[in-house]
Image (tube, rainbow over all chains, first blue to last red; front, top):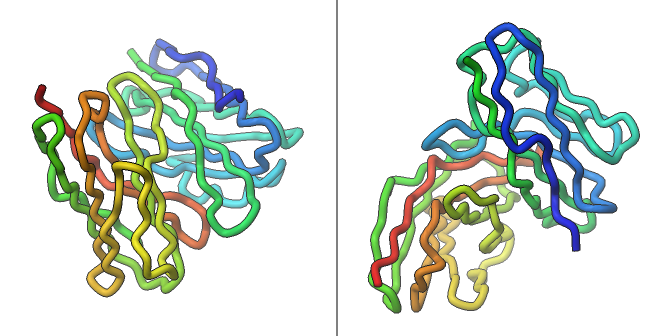
Length: 115
Length: 113
């Protein structure tokens, strides 16, 4: 059973650069979620997809953040013009919409450091 | 807006003993789901237990059980017969009707041998 995978696991970048992270959900999961987790805090919801449709994106932190899931499988999260405050762990989760529970399973995360 | 509060930043328990982690939440919704997730050091988040708000019976999963008090908006996690592998950050979470999860700030659990 393959879980949620994320790449890269670590990313170090200079302020002002663009970065892109990838998430591969559990096979056949139709929902995919992105979260940000800063040190000592719980994850903070950013956006989610059902298949290829982005159903909620109002919680994206700014217009520098964008996410795609073009074929309803993997997803990418892009941060443009990175700032030091963007340094955090970015988590992806997936779920299968089948009944009311819709439990989310998390990936290992991508740790971003902006210098 | 829904918020989740975990009032215990850190907890400690002796191996084989029982510990209870607290969680309260605020919502105006009547139907929702609550979760406890475990995040071991440098490892990914793992689901521990979930509770549907419309169910009165408290959920249990082996050594893990919850005390769900809907009127009080309280959702505590009890870990029985604590093991060294239970040491982790524990996050309480509320799933909104828009399907985003609201997490508390977490409780760091230490298990002493």
